[in-house]
Amino acid sequence: DGGITQSPKYLFRKEGQNVTLSCEQNLNHDAMYWYRQDPGQGLRLIYYSQIVNDFQKGDIAEGYSVSREKKESFPLTVTSAQKNPTAFYLCASSIGGGHNQPQHFGDGTRLSIL
Amino acid sequence: GENVEQHPSTLSVQEGDSAVIKCTYSDSASNYFPWYKQELGKRPQLIIDIRSNVGEKKDQRIAVTLNKTAKHFSLHITETQPEDSAVYFCAARSNTGNQFYFGTGTSLTVIP
Image (tube, rainbow over the protein chains, first blue to last red):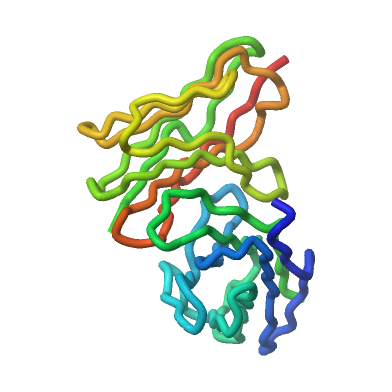
């Protein structure tokens, strides 16, 4: 899925620091998503956005924030309020608009605490 | 909201045997069911999907079946190969929104 780019691949956070994970797509998809994956676990939804300037909380939104100012970009900020941020973060996009089409995933960002 | 359950959580098969992974869902409004394969440290990749107006779909060694009445769908892999070893996730999408609901994953090991 070369159409979704996540950066950086690895990220380290110091205590009390906010960090931002980048997600960019050139697939012209309306919907974008952020998931958290812990070792040996499934995908848990943090936030999703169905259209520019709109987003909804997922199951584990506390300690995270997002913005959707442009269609192709959906950055995720892990705030200092998230006490256990160590995980693999996956960004995804889909056509949206009620179409039954799959999500496409980025390569992920692995976040660790220093 | 939707709840997707996936079984088994781990599965080991001998090379050449078949593997079956089962998922159930709770929301009758769900109408799209993709399956993803995730290798260690990599992105999930779509391997097959099925829509609610179809009961079965095949792609070479992979097939998916859907029973809307019972609200369950299954992934079938025949003639398994060592490169099939990975974690497989099922998902369901409701026609009331763009949110996808994932199962907890099945770690498949194919023993040479």
